[in-house]
Amino acid sequence: MNLNTPGSVVFENVVKKYGEVTALKALNLTVEPGTLVTLLGPSGCGKTTTLRLIAGLEAATSGKVIIGGKDVTHLSATYRAVSMVFQSYALFPHMTVRQNVAYGLTVKGMNKREAAGSADAGLEMVGLKGFGDRLPSELSGGQQQRVAVARAIVLEPEVLLLDEPLSNLDAKLRRHVREEIRQIQQELGLTAVYVTHDQEEAMAVSDRIIVMRNAEIAQEGNPHDLYERPNSAFIADFIGDANLVDCEVISTSDKGAEVAISGQQLLIPNEFNHKGNAKLVLRPHHIQLSDGGEGFEGNITYAAYLGNQVQYTIDGALGPLFVITDITSNPFSTGQNVRISFDPRKARLVAG
Image (cartoon, rainbow, N blue to C red; front, side):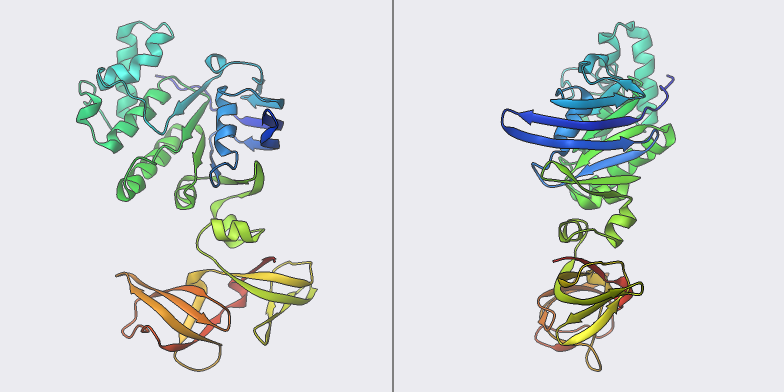
């Protein structure tokens, strides 16, 4: 089995409407060959519509869809070099694993012997060598998902599409299977577009994440950039846990922003060009707690020991906070007064 050269995906001002409802607003995006890009966002944000437009399962109202340098805007799914892995796996229960993987090849006219050989090669790629004669019911959920991936790969697509592929798996299995999908994508050099609403899943598998909201792109970048440099309160809250603390920007300079927060003034060294009300983004593990000394006042309202960390809910001068600390010999207790501090270099300002 020889895979096609991975293709790029380009949207040029793509709009999708259903009657009076706009499901996608003038979307421009590029997926580079050989990369895994995740469309991430809450339900109804437009991510699945985008995936279906790539697949040819939906037609664009206006704009261009280009795959591998070819304008496919008006081509049906049959004539696009893409394969999709569905949320439900969509395996035929009465067929063997090999027959399931070979199905698309036989539909395209390949003889059964060649299709079976390609299916076995695909199963070996996803770590299921020797499983060809089993029925789907004899496999675990994770194994069935790998069969679905193998079925998509053997069609030698320019672009692999994955629609919420792990949503039917339990938490531990999701982590294991997402690692396998990422490894397969990297080893084969596939171009992949992955849809999920799970931000941890997106951060674990992606070269680049496109966060969508209200039928358009809210922010895009690699996982590190989105986590450390959110451009809005929505992104800060959606990508990982975040505390959003009310503050006032007094002045700005090339050194950063002078911020008033709960009676104190701090210099936050990140670019911010607006004075007035704003939000300070504090990640839970960037906050330090102490039983005395300098800092903002707070009171522990909830403490949860989780083996490798302690999670606290705190009420105080900065408002309600969620804090994560490493295990210490004397963790704080519910009802205890504490002092709260943080490194201004690790805080982030966003519009209020």
